[in-house]
Length: 315
Ligand SMILES: C[S@@+](CC[C@H](N)C(=O)[O-])C[C@H]1O[C@@H](n2cnc3c(N)ncnc32)[C@H](O)[C@@H]1O
Image (cartoon, rainbow, N blue to C red; front, side, top):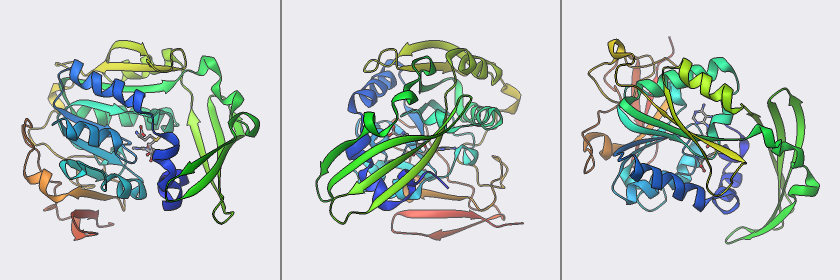
């Protein structure tokens, strides 16, 4: 279950108004062009803004997100019909052979344990082509940003079209080493409702992140400052070397049906995908395959128009 802010529809409706960061996403768009990428995998795509920006520019994009309510917002955006949307965590990825994987918005901080993070890196590495890049940012723990995550420093109000004025604030509820747990509150002026969302984030320092990347078989090409938040966030650019893990490369491409041959099984996991993009590669794409719907362990059904769910039968 994703955090309430990504999963509860009334809170997800606020996400773009409260948290959209156009300059950060512009920096990512610029990097896609800088690296000459064509097929991009956006992990933790949330409400899909970045994926849609790339689709608008003609890139082939897969947006992966575990919170279905966020994907519901994403699929209403312009160019969303050109994105392959996947509902799930990184575990459901197969060998997509993307040439760039991104995690924008400090998504990596949601991978709390070393085991979880290294498993995610292994799956991401397998979903990249040789020489493919992984790019993500994380808040710089040297700045101790959570020290000002209290009501006094964070209380703000915003008038949101169609919703009304919403007051928001954060409070730290628990600190354990580099794990910071905080509560975000959202007060709706329209009916006085107060909804909360609890999150735990891992604040890894630069050296820890670099070592984890190397351990996972990546080469750390560069660590940049986030152009709009110098000193506050670190942007990591890692490369999957051409010769790494060659023996494990499989000829097939696509998303792993949980329990299928292409990926790690996740019991009860669902994959939601746009129907057309899987069968009809977009311009510039070298092709994609469908999730392995034919696998006996999986069944498919329509969830809502334009989307298909692939569900693994429990064993
Ligand atoms: C801070 S939001 C960033 C959303 C989006 N990337 C952006 O820049 O606006 C973090 C996102 O990561 C997703 N997430 C959390 N854990 C994840 C996991 N294990 N695999 C993939 N996505 C995850 C959340 O559901 C959420 O949408």
